[in-house]
Length: 208
Image (tube, rainbow, N blue to C red):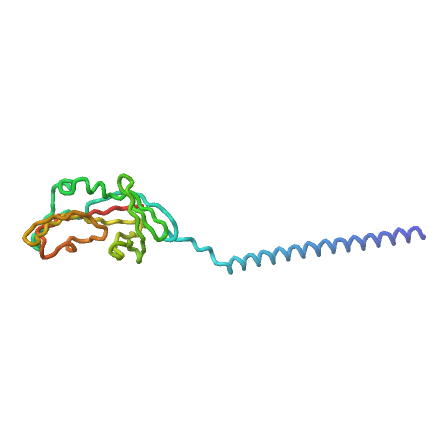
């Protein structure tokens, strides 16, 4: 009888220990589950609170654009305001190798500076600034910002170069000036009361 009581008591004790152990295991699992949910919620809130990193714009970084193509926009002879005609001759017939030597092949942007690389690795360096989509370069000799080009809707940069040959009268003498400028948009900027004729060539250079 005592043996049976002892066995029954042992069985009951073992069963209680088993339930307590199972209860402890469930408690640990539950706490782990709650901790996991809390971690996920914290991570989610942190992601929402922390703003996405702001990527630098091209204007804030160094980058290089290569010449893709160039094209003739205007090629005219201006004798006066009422006598303007398109020229059919070749550009080299008037400007020789000047166009080839002046052709920009590469634009190197480095934050607030611009290097224009031309034929034979000739490099022109300028300070630059953007106003909306327009590009300006600083001409130090005249202490002036001048228009140089602009950025199109596809992100390409377009440079304009105006080539000119001007014949002028001055004190009953005739002299000729030849050159090119980035900021020349129209031949009207070259006209004055003393000019005899203007050979005008406008070319557009596209970089990407």
